[in-house]
Length: 519
Ligand code: HEM
Image 1: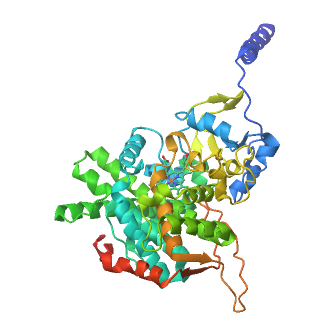
Image 2: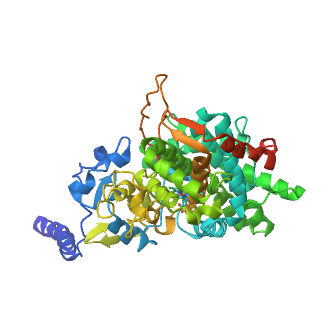
């Protein structure tokens, strides 16, 4: 009996083991992940993840592991791509596979940032938002109707700069916000005091950075925590999520309702929101509309002001570029009027300077992460579904395959008979997630540069003894990299320039802001 039992037991154990061994032996082998640092049991590469300044942290990956490398932390795969060819092959050619964004329980599900275009997942709602934006700002011709507004706003910028040259960066931001909100909602901001809508948007943006800070919210690693009752100890994050959620939704709903009231009263300014609302959209389209409208100012004003902040710093560091740009403006436009959009095609040096500005200081050095929506195989490596993809744009901007002496700021590289690679092909991102505001962004940058240089000299500040002060070059470490504070001198070029700047108040008297109409 016991013999029989032991034989049965052995058989019962041996059969499944044999089957398991055979399955393993004949199972198609999963290709390896791209190379990367060796991880520890359970936590994987958690200790290899960046604590701050992620783009610097990943710099060495290209030399150590090649153009594509990987890490796995707490079961999540991160793929770092450091060259153009791999990026284009994956994110452009296989764009549907890589059209996702990382998911966050706290920022996404609990606060609702996954409703915002920039964090939304690929699908019908995403496509509806992108389609609405495409018709409005998705091409050079689409933005033409807003050029007049842009010219007036940029002239206000010059006038504020003349009155208060010390507030350069705040003024740049104000201008980008003023323009974006006019385009998105026909909303005129307060310029004398803090505007309530900008206050709300900036609060929500600050909270977004806190909410997506890697490793800060335990609920991202253990999503079940969100279902526990709020009175339990350690559940304070639920209250925080509630407050942040209120701000996130308010920044979307309040300007949208403002436009609806303006339309009802027959006083709505032309804008993205009023144009689509006039077509009486169904509920789904209206929902897509209000979140897409938020993307115009939420997605646009920060990177645009970062690029312009970099422009002013670069003018101090490379005075020869400043002088050449001014000389071109003087010969093409003259000094009796301000440049406009119609001058753009006759200003090749300015166009080259804009490209070099984008390349030399990539404001989004690691792009916005994409997420693989299915398993993919590239060059024999497995990129598992759910992997977070980090395209290292800074590396691309410094690649000597495309750029000679990449550390030099040299607009001439784009004016050669064989121009070097135009950074517009990658600095605005890739595939289905590429920036929808590229032409609008270039228009903002163009007009600010040409109008500023035609009436102001942008130079290094001087000490009392006349010696120049070298500006401090320090770049912010956020997702969008702004320059740190630096000293400068911005002075009008002539009395004629002063008169041109001031003429905006006669030609376009300042209208009252809409701040008080935002309920
Ligand atoms: C010079 C200024 C700008 C730069 C350098 C820039 C760059 C970028 C980059 C690199 C991305 C990520 C693309 C990707 O994931 O592959 C992006 C996304 C985005 N940008 Fe821009 N951008 C700028 C201005 C603007 C403007 C003016 C708008 C306003 C409409 C805008 C709206 C957006 C939105 C909504 C997204 C998210 C798209 C999505 O997830 O589908 N950006 N931008």
